[in-house]
Amino acid sequence: MHVNIIHEMLQWLELYLEKGLSLDAVSEKVGYSKWHLQREFKKKTGRVLGHYIRERRLSKTALALRLTHRSVLNIALHYNFDSQQTFTRAFKRQFGMPPGSYRRGNIADMTEMCPPIQLPAIAPPEPEFIHLPGKQLQGVTHRFSSTLEQYHHQQERQRRLFWESYLAKMDSLPPVVYGLRRSQPSRDKDDELVTQFATALSADETLGDASSGDAIYIQPGQYALFRYVGGLDRLQDFILSLYKSSLPSYQLIGTGCSYKFGGKGGNQAIAAAKAGAGVAFLGAVGADDNGRFLIATLRDCGVDTTHIETIGSIASGMSVAMTDAEGDYGAIVVSAANTRINTDRLAHDDVWSGVGMLILQNEVPESVNLSAAREARRRKIMVCLNAAPATALSADFERCIDVLAVNSVEARDMSGVAVNDLDSAGEAVLALKARFPIVMVTAGGHGVAFSDIADAYAFFPAEPVELVSTHGAGDCFMGTFCQAFNDGAPLGEAIKAANHAAAKHVSQPKTDS
Image 1 (tube, rainbow, N blue to C red):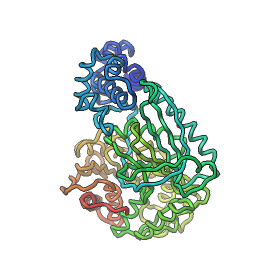
Image 2 (tube, one colour):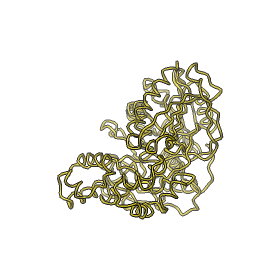
Image 3 (cartoon, one colour):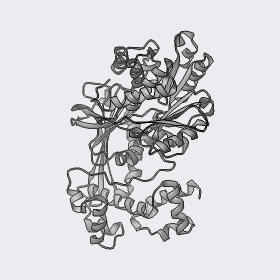
Image 4 (cartoon, rainbow, N blue to C red):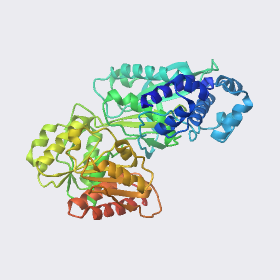
């Protein structure tokens, strides 16, 4: 059974979940026997079809409880349960509490939500957990009403129209734009919810009509920050993927946003410098406070910033604060300036003076990475790619890479091997070894598997430590490895040093740098 058939079936299921679909009805729709359908569904998704349908249907009822004033009985009957008692028992099994308690809770507990399966599978981006102080904003609000069943189509359309109208009022893109959303039950109609979009700037910024309007206040607290790198044309898809996958997958309830130093390239450059390497960073920032902050942070950590270009016509980044369906904030960051790197300067010999290794990430367009990799190979400089975030690589780019480093999620996306321990990490290494001379797969708390020869791999288990935070561990690993390997350490020794540095990193409290 082709994956496209499963994909189309998943879309059909979303439209008819409230009908109380049976396996017989689904198999008749798809045109395969129940036995074959269930086997293929499990093979393609890793889920049991009957369990998935039940969990998705109950997740829909959870949203109805929080976002509408429908009675519990009405919700039970709408989603085709035999009775309110049957619904209550099923809901309690999945969410650990009866429907009434879930509705009355101070927060919407998303930990047992079942997000819709996406094919091909999209790995949810890893959030950065931060503290955000309270902030006063000034912006424009927009509201619309819909039933819960109409909501997803309506909110995508309305959000796009609202953003286009808002951004059209700006002469230039400001460093930070806040986009917030809150949905709540309608006061007038039991089966409808009201959604409010707010797009705003800091209260001290003025951009004509775009900055006038309503006063908005972001509450202080703990937030999750998601980083987005790419064109604005894919931003909407990224936002939707957060609601569908990331918030349920990471069991996030309180969320928010901030702009701070980061990016895998910057973090890895600092890690390599701290390990003792001489590091130069090539990239681009906007002519704004954020750009100056990024450059100053790199310089303070000993990184040469001579080759960072400042572009006056674009911001260093755009942070979009957003909320889930209960009004709890999440955030994404658009790295605008780094998509405008001038590749012509890569041909200049002074850029490569004294360089022994080029370290790349997928945070910039592949055309930039390919240009840099080709220039490095022309000068016999080793090219190391940390393929994060995961994305498809062209054959031309793959041929330029000497060392590939990926985590378990990226390894799965690139090799098709699900990594959940060191043995499966080794299988992923061997699958990728056919395409790259040296491969490393980090498997989180399990350790790291690697190979530089055909048909064999080695591994180092993770060092036992008292875990404080895993944030930044992969970047610490990469920077330390590249410093050691570039200095002449054998592959195994360089990885061992990186493994030790990562273990030390996760056992220490983190600072912004």
